[in-house]
Length: 77
Image 1 (cartoon, rainbow, N blue to C red):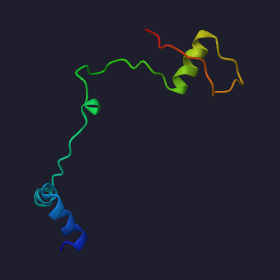
Image 2: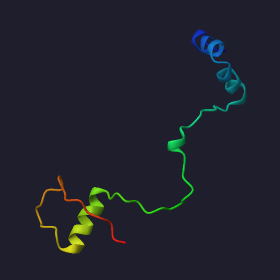
Image 3: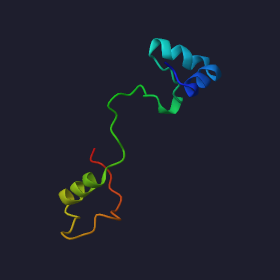
Image 4: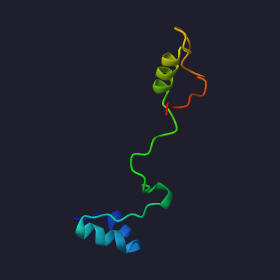
């Protein structure tokens, strides 16, 4: 049995009422959040551990150096 709050939502939003019957909630998604056509594109941003690894490989990392405030690091091509 549905509570009074749920009934109020169903009166205001008819689409919500339909979703209760089907169990499917339809929500729109902003176009900028949808997946693009290029699957598996290379990221241009590196995570902190990836930047430290790249700096170690290039010999630019010193032991005991702070991991905060790292220099910009471009990914290898």
